[in-house]
Each structure stands twice: as structure tokens, then as C-alpha cells.
Image 1 (cartoon, rainbow, N blue to C red):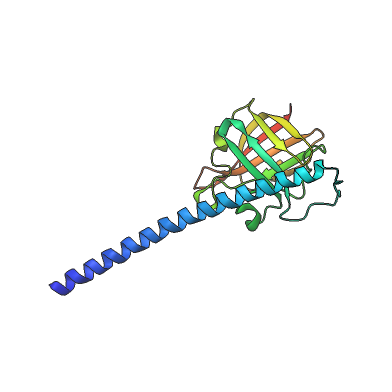
Image 2 (image 1 turned 135 degrees about the vertical axis):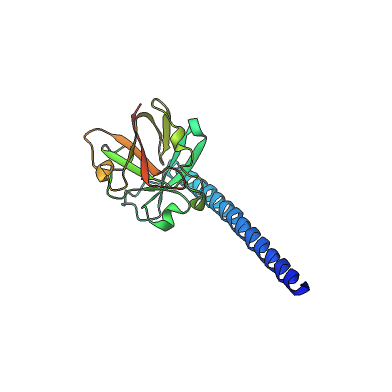
Length: 193
């Protein structure tokens, strides 16, 4: 009888330990992602100061991982760095620019992806709160561009037309939806204001 109680207590303690370990790991991951995001934003802003001090922009094409922009969405209090690429490593601590699409301010369709579930931080967690008419600001190394949300839609993950180039300048943001389930893609399309 005493042996069974002892086994139950040990199992209970182990389960509590595992639960606390999972919670602690999640908290530490969020802290790391927040810290990485802030470092990328600061690095980008430092580079802006260098460009503004008459150091010419090299014009070299971006390589995966380069910080390209800062995307700010005032309505949802969102400020996130955008790096080149959409690999797992890039999207772990930033938004990612789809390499096959246009760059901001160069005409065509600039597509930016981001996670919104608890595992990968909160980059686009509140994107579903954005409404038509809301502003999206994009800080480049030389200027801030303002876009206005014109269309919001939910598509299947296989719907690749959101990556298609357009005749007019457009900013397309997308993320998985619904949050935690990720069976579809939430797409926000904005045009220069």
C-alpha cells in the first residue's frame, strides 16, 4: 500500500516537473524571439543612419537573412523586421520577404510572410484584426512608405496566385489561419496611399 502511494507521488512530481519544463521552455523561447526581433530592428535603424551619412547603398541583391525593412501596423501595435527569404530560420525571428516577388517601392507585388502561432512568436498574431482602410507603414533604409489595406481574404495553402506579380505596386501580407490550426492563409493586400 505504501509502495503504491510512493509510486503515485513520484509520478505526480514527474508530471508537474514536465509541465513546468514545458512552460519555462515556452517563456524562454518567447523572450529569445522578442530579443532577436529588437536586435534586428536596432541593427536596421543603425544601418539607416550609416546610409544617411552619405554611404552609398551598394544596390547588391539581398541574400537570405538580410534585414530589408521594418513593417509597422499601428492598428494592431505591430512592429517587425522583414528579412529576405521565408525559410524556417528567417521566420523564426522575423517576417520574411518572398524572394520571387518585387521589393518595396519598385512596383509590382511585394509579398511578406509571417507566423502567428505560439511556437514561433507573435509576429502576425493579430493580423486578423486589420480592416480595410487601415494603414501599413514600411520603413526602408531611405524612407517610410504608407500603404492602405484594400482587400482581405482567406485562401487555401495551395493558392499561389497571391505571389503573382501585378501591374501596379502592391503590398501583400500573409499568415496561417485560424491561429493554432493553420488550415488556410489570411491575406492582406494593400496599395500605396
